[in-house]
Length: 153
Image (cartoon, rainbow, N blue to C red; front, side, top):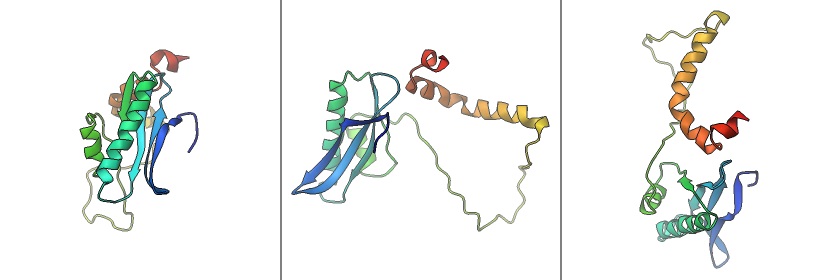
């Protein structure tokens, strides 16, 4: 992993007898002092939760030593990871929804929703609906990207 947001010094690997047991990564946001804990993964074992808790604690300690203002965590809704973050004091703030589509099956009943190709005539209406649908999420994104002043430049 690399890139401008991956924080090498704030990312850790748990090992025992030369075998990797788990890892966690700290990610920088474009806004100074904002971090995100990601990539928590631990091999299945009796001490899986304990190892995960130690990795998250290590990432938190690094973030604190780096003058952290905001620390967020991203995790799929899978145990034991959700519980590890809860025990570390994180509270769910935002959820993302992923939908998978199976195009091999189709519903037999007719839908009351009509789908059409977008014409120039309705492009402005479609853009307005899209913007209004995303508006609740913009505040999070704008802050994560450094605030309105940074984005306006």
